[in-house]
Length: 210
Image (tube, rainbow, N blue to C red; front, top):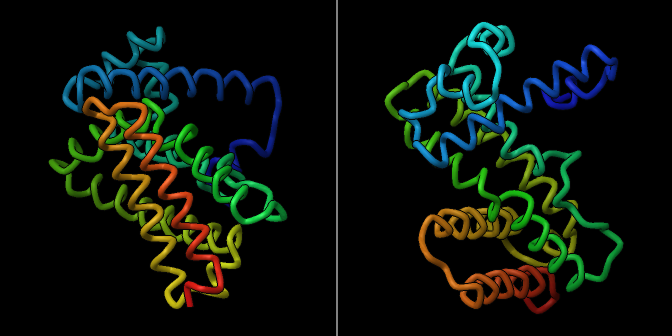
């Protein structure tokens, strides 16, 4: 069970208040990362943005490193088994691929919080212990993604000679497109890239890919 699933398991009024406060802190931290970068996202600045006391923030996240790790979880949570990017596996392959790319883009890789996460990734390089933990989490998320992707697109596992490579390529393409959003990207350029990715998934799942 993931940490996020454990947090959702018991829904009491007190737990809901805790989750609401934590979500305010997470949102404030992601906003500051996007606007001020890693150095600007201090605990004091995050507490002010979230409109909570520093003591209250540290009650929920006892260190900046703990909060930063939680931010990575929050950004990548839609890729988990309970996430919101996975379409109905019974849909026809082209419709399934289109739905997946659209959901993955709008819920994760094209969202403002994903660009903010890159400030976190680059900023925490100065803290080897934190970077190592985040890299371990990234590796786990990648493996969950690859497995769930191939479960959602069993045709890729059946027909393509390197299904794991397809999953890795799709994730890399979405991640790269998300980073590109830091710059000026025209709607037509973005739409074209996502359309090609959709077509690539369909082709990888067709019998001709073998």
